[in-house]
Amino acid sequence: MAKIFCVANQKGGVGKTTTTVNLAAGLAKIGQRVLMVDLDPQGNATMGSGVDKRSVALSVYDVLLESATVAEARVRADKCGYDVLAANRELAGAEIEIVNLDRREKRLKQAFATVQSEYDFILVDCPPSLSMLTLNGLCAANGVIVPMQCEYFALEGLTDLVNTIKQVHANLNPDLQIIGLLRMMFDPRITLQQQVSDQLKGHFGGKVFDTVIPRNVRLAEAPSYGLPGVIFDPSAKGSLAFIAFAQEMVKRVATM
Image (cartoon, rainbow, N blue to C red):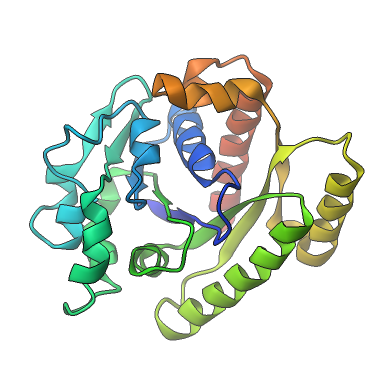
């Protein structure tokens, strides 16, 4: 049975999509069966997996409106080794359309139930806001992976996210928990980043992943080629860090 994880942070620009596609590719490389779900209307995770968001016949929008199943809408990202449930601009309209529908927060959860046995991991890339889309992701998930930069404002955003997760846990999804915090774009030469990293470990302890993703040009270049960094340049420092992170995730899930 697949474990379902949202990659979420209400702060933009912290590397959510980079984390989602590279973790998906890293898990696939070490033999895991992965479905990557793009819940962001911008469709960056879709394009970053080598899938053209403009040409997909069905997307996560159709799944949320229950006009298609996950099995019908998913596509294979051959170069990446995982399946993709794509997003495109249509998804922006879903926000408004599902507000008045039954079970509006639980639609994704019910859709995943039909394919959960086919995967080891389902990873959901959430938009950088607490929207009806993010809420669907959080209601479907076993846990949340929080990518963050070690900067002062990131700590502020983290407080908001933790409160959101507590509310969803209390009211909609008692299984939801923070799986871990992933330090992204980390540069050990910057004193402030080191200090924030120490603060995180002091406050969250074992919830901070051991793996640290360094600031890496090859990871930043990869999306323009429609590939995760792990596939684009497997020997880059950032790619090797994501493979290590995938291995750490498998171990962490085994102890859940």
